[in-house]
Image (cartoon, rainbow, N blue to C red; front, side, top):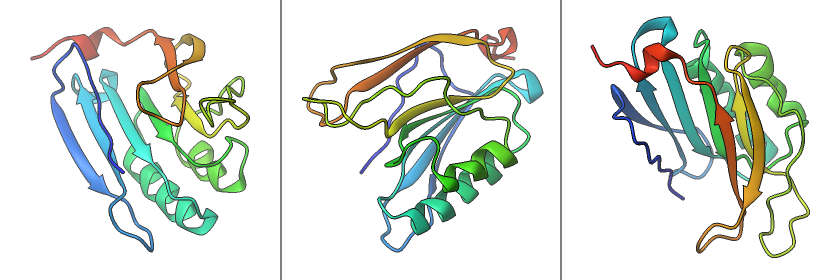
Amino acid sequence: SGNGLVSKLEPVEVIDHPLPGRITGRGVLMARFGDGDEGLTIAVAHLSLGAQSRRAQLAFIAELLHGHPHAVLMGDFNCTADRPEMDLLYSRTRLQPPACAVHTFPSWKPLRAIDHILVTDALPCDGLCAFPAAFSDHLALSITLEVPEAALRRD
């Protein structure tokens, strides 16, 4: 598995962290736009299939995103947003559960909402929707965010 991020803006910093788990190779890609508390942190992850591995991975991600008021975590979580292991994110960060479940898997007949875009409470957003993605068995997700002005500046 791999993670990627395409942006019109150049990030200040990009770090690819390996995620814990029984099988190596999964990671969380973090990009920071702007500096300090007013900047924006974007994280992209592809979590494991097993609940125990996901719990360890989500605890690790929660540690990385703790204290970031303007953060987005997106990717293939391989679970619904209401699973017990997801509570680690909601209790240890400002990330919020999605307002609605958007089914993304499988792409040819979406029955499960296992891909998510989670946003902190300080980032106004709307328009969450799914659409076909090239060469994937998942639908892609899209959301409109109000990005902090500090994230658009490079000092």
